[in-house]
Image 1 (cartoon, rainbow, N blue to C red):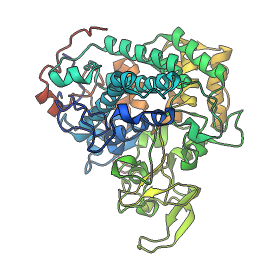
Image 2 (tube, rainbow, N blue to C red):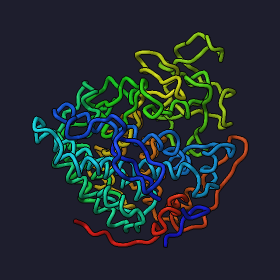
Image 3 (cartoon, rainbow, N blue to C red):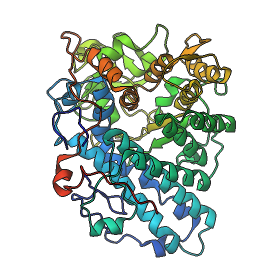
Length: 533
């Protein structure tokens, strides 16, 4: 049995085909919404089939995106801070238990995405209409295998041993199942991504951003390179990353190929699905409660920046503020705000009155910040609705926006390439290709290039580049536990006035299984090798 870092040990809540989450694990049965078309009479054209997977990029991730994602990644890692009065605060000081909703929400979203992917994988080949081309069917199935792989990659990094579910019907007959070992989960992920690579369309990502929304064969190659890196299969990771780089499909905004853009442009809604985006969750500001992005509301340091009545649920940590960015790093001001920072593209209300005038060009003032952090989050903060800069908002639904959530960007692929060529978590390299990839990211940030790099250089660069995008906790998990423990315990997890530190007494950074799923599935803590078909 694994020993968890947190107070209590903690299942399996899955969604049906039509992208609605179920409230019970055993309700994993495909029950379409009333009046919804069946596959046999609906997917009768390539266009309809191409749109079939839209929900796999958004609505199935809503439970996690609305708050859990940041609690279990950037807050727990020490990048973000919240006081003890809200749920995020329990992840600042590690006082949460396995009954906390963030844990079950993340689990539910991952298995909901798996359930929906399974439903398509197991049903579409037999039920699409004769007008649907083989190419369109293969691409759709490739997307489903990619999403399933992404879901399991999230699960295995957070919980380690988890159940592998390939067939919804089998699971609906017997939902009391053991977990499968980590190595089997990684093997399953690799199989899914290789299928995706072979069946997804190739893309040439240009300025038609709408055409970039869904993943490509290149996306799957990039993601498999990341999976290989986590397993320290460096040669394979380096080869795949190099293949993606050579393809030219993805580009850095503000890099040599797109010099008229910048890191800041990544976080404007109008640039959703840009050339740097490898895979993003897709959101709409015109749909229902389950279809929008909460980040502007959660991150914005004050109410004048949001389309609802609350803001500032989380803030930058003292560690992020003081220990991550070098002098002159252009990413800092786009990651968090310091007093006096000016943002020309942010619109805000002049006052908190309902009919307040909306102004363009926001300057951060510390007295308006809610968490006493002394700074405010900027990444994913897009301000009040200001078309066409922001795109539309869902004002009635907590001010949700249509800003995408990056799950992987080309900048990360370049850093994966550099680390894979280094080939270990020790030593250094002056390899020309490793330096080319590493320095491309630094050049975009306005920093001097390096002639030799170490693992620590790459690790620090990853944190600066990807802060508040959900990766740092997983990076800590890749380290020897003693080193990760030392880093986390050294962090100041208090506010600007009171310094606080945590003490970790366990042997890994895995989360506990959700409490309700342990009740429904008492075999969850058992580990049985998976029988691959």
